[in-house]
Length: 345
Ligand code: C2O
Image 1: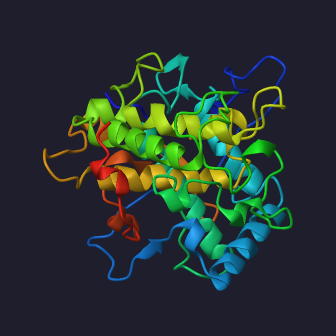
Image 2: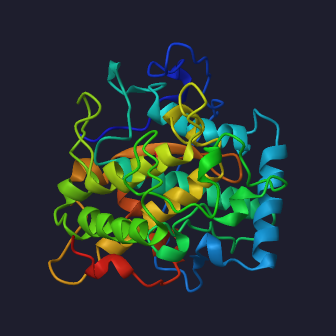
């Protein structure tokens, strides 16, 4: 059977945080839950997610204002940035138990839920930002870390006067430092020059995205009702996703916060753009030339549900099956070159 959306009234302190961390990440409880209904067809106008390093001034300004407003909402408003960050903590650090299995946590990482869970999280985040600036066309920019021009922290996040800034990041990884897609903590190598790093990154992209041809290899292993968490992650989650988190966090903090730990990741606005590219690569994977690559068709995957608050502060129950086509969610990604396609290591 599929994992069911958690009962928010049973949310508790996270079981899975370092002992020195005290964090409460339960959302407010809602009087009722609305079931998400997908549109009958693809909307004629889609929100287009653009690469963060190519935005014009107008777009940057509007993104900034939206973030400012999200940060300014009271902490108990489910649309606030504080609550948005807690969404990740609650689903990823053991604050929810599985329905019917009170001794088993829900964990959306290290399993086949990794991609669809984050897709839905970003969907609501984007809608909330858009509504805060009365712009339903607002699309979340993505960090184009798979392209040489995007292989550094996008400048819009590195400006300390911007609402997109977060001080809990590795001070040595500010732009224009080139990202290392297989970074492990402390593994900065000054002998590698930018060009070598970029070539290395492209071959990692090939290995993690082109090589895995089955859903299990790409998404991660099945995780059904009653299963213990963490059956095993897929190629994209393992690398470069995890490495980008480690690369972004501040190693001087006890748990590499913010990006370097689940409970704090969502406190960095960069998190959402990092994940928008993960999300984009899921779309790309399904259209790669050669062997046909497809989503799971297993109903336990398709029927898995989550709950999120929407831009109207309503609690919405969503299913994985309604997220497999981003156009039905109203958005798409700007087409960009994929220089890693031919970088067989
Ligand atoms: Cu939920 Cu990038 O992690």
